[in-house]
Amino acid sequence: MSNVLQPATVLTPAPRRHALGMPAGSVRAILALAVLGLLWTVALTHPHGETVSEADKHLPTILIALQILMVLVLVHFFTAHGHTIGRHISGVAPLGLPSGVIRFVLAVGYIGLSVFLLYNQADFDLPDKNSMWSLLLELVVVLVSYFAGMLVSACVRMTWGDPPPAPYQDMEAWVAILSLLGLGLVVLIHLINRSVAVENRISLDVAQAVLSGLIGLYFGARS
Image 1 (cartoon, helix red, strand yellow):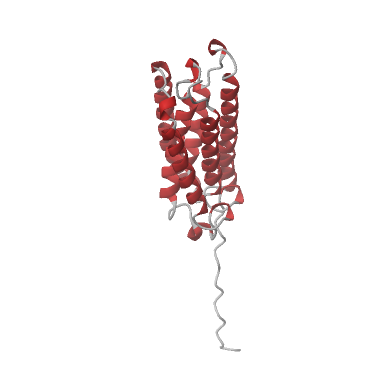
Image 2 (cartoon, helix red, strand yellow):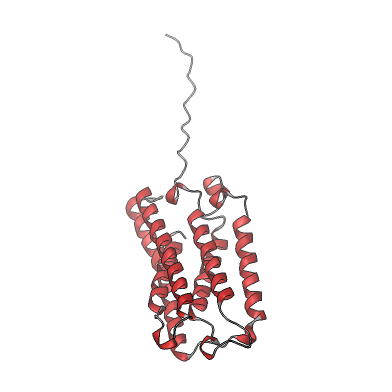
């Protein structure tokens, strides 16, 4: 009988799967870039200048609502690097792009938007009091949803372990992506609203708050 010791077999752990089978942070990158794109769409298409009608002099609530969501998204995306996003998490940066590209685009895009709005601030008035209440509702919904997402995620991890099952991760991602598409529809309706009389315009406050809340819920769950 041979006494030669056989080398032990080293088991390499299977790579961790992330939402939709994409690199860590990819779904969040898609959501963040899309929200930024919607912000630019509303800002660029909103009338400004001396010929603006009285009804369009106020900053549209959808613009401020998207700003609230965008700030939350930016804070999360930048602070998540090194924790739940990064090459050391899945071996690749979000969307498989070079490291830092998404953060660079988000930072430059948002700073550029801020400069654009600052340059045109003389043409915009703050929303009226009724609209401000809607924006307060938006802020509360987004923040509550974000922390609710963190709580739900903690409960799921305690129940099923970490990482959560792939179907659950994918369901979360699809809910957020479908909410984003809904938010895009809200922006489209906002653009159509501008061509009709003020009293006939469709109210979008509740829809934009709910959809923004669902996106905030996803970012909270991925914290």
